[in-house]
Amino acid sequence: MEAVQEKKLYGILAEFRHPGELVKAANAVRSAGYQKFDTYSPFPIHGMDKAMGLKRSKVGIIVLICGILGGVGALTMMIWMLGIDYPLNISGKPHINLPAFVPITFELTVLLASFGALFGMLGLNGLPKHHNPLFNSERFSKHATDDGFFLCIESNDSLFSTDKVTQLFKDTGALHVEEVFE
Image (cartoon, rainbow, N blue to C red; front, side, top):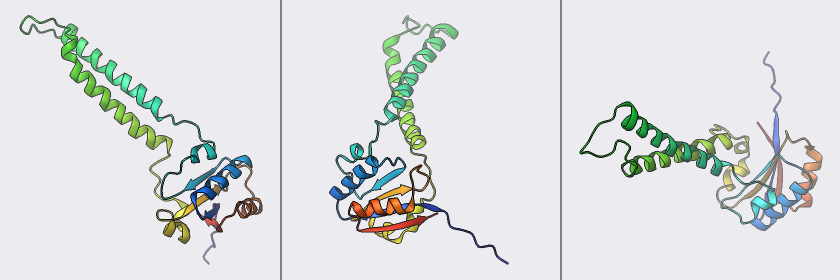
């Protein structure tokens, strides 16, 4: 006999008519105390970060640290190699010639900062994510990138209750509410 696997609830997804309703719903969800929720729209919505209570991104700090490490590393490497480890007398110029080190220092600063931006963003976003359970919803798959405005509260939120979340979405004017399974 084949064992029947029970589907695990990922969250409850609600669709809204326009961006204003989505912002109001995000405010209501945050005010109700939910923390594990996200909004989806085909374009950025002004004020959504504030409505969701999002903090500033840490990517900027990561980029700054990586850029400083790149610049300091490049200077340290060139001063060590050309001034201490293997000094060469080239046309009577000084061994540690800082103006000549500017291009390489700049390039390594930019290179490490861009690596920091890429890998910092991937790490903070939890990417790569090969499958998002929201794509199991036919409505979400068809409208999320075209004309749909969605909000999903995940089932692993400490306040999550199917009945309470469904009622909250209905109270905020959701056009459609559905459960999404993994």
